Amino acid sequence: MASDKGILYGLGVGPGDPDLITLKAGKILQHVDVVYAAGSTKNDHSLAVNIAKAHIPENTPIKLLRFPMTSDKGEKKRAWESHARTIISEIEHGRKVAFITLGDSMTYSTYGYLMKTVLDLAPHLPVVSVPGITSYQAASASLNRPLVEGEESLLLLSGARGGHRFRQCSACTENIVFLKAYKNVIDINDALDEAGCLETSVAVSNCSLPEETVTRDLRTLDGAGKNYWTLILTHRKAENGQTKK
Image (cartoon, rainbow, N blue to C red; front, side, top):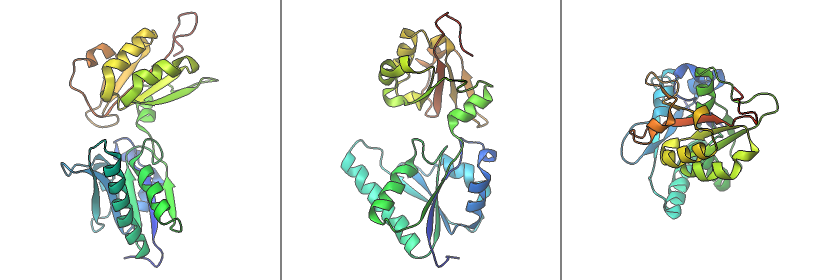
């Protein structure tokens, strides 16, 4: 049942394993009135819903907000505003709304855009964002490979322009993560090879899911079928030529 005061919860539901949802996100899912997630205009699949379903009561409605796969900024903006108004209407009717998103709610997140649009249109509405475990944290743990140690730094890059950004910034950091590396894996591999980092890199696809795969020879990714859920962990060699991990 709806309460007198509506609210929006943005929940990061982790990388894939339902057991990696935080206790806080799980508790919130137990008492919200409706759950929303991003969906494609092409199908009804939602990995975020699949992850969270075990934590959502059977009588709680789950709805997909469909986003067009387009580079048209105007079309994207219209979609964000339309979906934000849907959420705002729910909240103004006193409903507790959860929007679930993969990984962390504030890291390369669909929720981040929705949250900003909701607050732009209705800044008075209450919004609570709950962090989640990211895919690269889960991959690091799965590999028993520390992400960052001591005084080292960590650079997080989107795969879309990953090779170009790596060339610009790699000298300033020891550890790099490429998310959604499928978008430009050949250029990423070329950039890693140029920097002498290819041998110290590893790719993980479908992290924490039963079909998780680990690729230690990134050259094999060049001709392989591209997997949407592929990330790459890498680190630069120390000046003496020894790897840091």
